[in-house]
Amino acid sequence: MVDIKNDEYQIVGKAFVNGSIDNVTILIKNDKIVDIKKSERYGLRTLILKDDEILLPAMIDLHVHLRDWEQKYKEDIESGTKAAIKGGYTTIIEMPNTSPPLNTILRLEQRLEDLKSKSYVDYGIHFGIPDNLSELEKVAKKIIAIKLYPNDLKRIDEIFNIASKLNIKVAVHAEFNIGDEPLAVKYVLSKKPKSINLRFVHISRKESLTIIRNTSNNIFIEITPHHLLLSTDDVIHLPNGMKYVRPPIASQDDKIALYNALISGLINFIATDHAPHALNEKLSENPPPGFPGLEIALPLMITQWIKGTISLNRIIETMSTNPAKYLGINKGLISKGFYADLTIINFKTWKPVKASEFLSKAKYTPFENWSLTGWPTKVFIRGSLAYDSDNIFSVKGKHVLEL
Image (cartoon, rainbow, N blue to C red; front, side, top):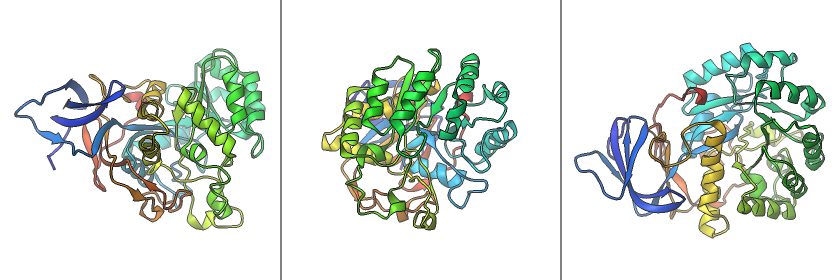
């Protein structure tokens, strides 16, 4: 293994550049990609990729729950961001339903301090809806977006009004009650001002896609691997807690509709909705919703590419390029002048998913024993090696708004 730090070196081999795989040399200096060539530069430290490896832009996840604080038994910042690195992610955006919730200025400032000192990846925060909406003015420049949960929809008019005035992005979990997503999507769209940058998170129903497709622009659609790859038929054998998520896993027709929407370009983002819980909670009579996903989302999707069901271009667009554009950061592409946030995957070695091997504290998954390929072998954050064959190196994460 070549000694890789972030001063100057080159990576030689197959890379996803300009929408296709090509044999290139990527020159990295400090934290940026400074050149892409067909030939090597001599006298420079060099990492040569193996024949079964491809260099990709690192993944960016817009929907992550790191728990911590009163729920650190489920997950904490360290375990969650280590899971992200292992899964090929170098940037994650956290959701605000922590305990206590991220809906006050003091808690936001504390969380940013915690992330600054503990995160292994770059980060940002969705802010919860405060009791006094005027507080949003004080946090607008510190957050990525505000997040509306089902209980917040009753205040949607006043929330949209102030978000529009402050030019704050809005992310919405569109459900009133479990499983009524299309109804909630239609309601949210009926209230949306034209100027609002609106993202529907974890969309899961065919009818929801139809409603959104027939509506105006400035709307982003996020889906998850579990809604894309699982239907109720696929999880019928699992205990209730192991298949419980919100929105619920849907029908085969819904799954096919998500596939078609992804292929057509309607889907903007694939996010994990990494939602860890303790195993005993998921096996209880009243299980909480959600699955860990950071360590397997990329292999799940690369496997679909290898099987020929989804193009690599759409995977990179929805898991890296588009999220970077949404955040306004120079990541998501292997391109001159961009941060050297890179993930090397092995696309020929297959191995089964084993939740017991997760770095996340959540040791369960509905994808247990699925045979996947595309597992990350090395990950770089801003030019520095952060992951190498199960070894994680401490690279301090930065707030994406400071990049």
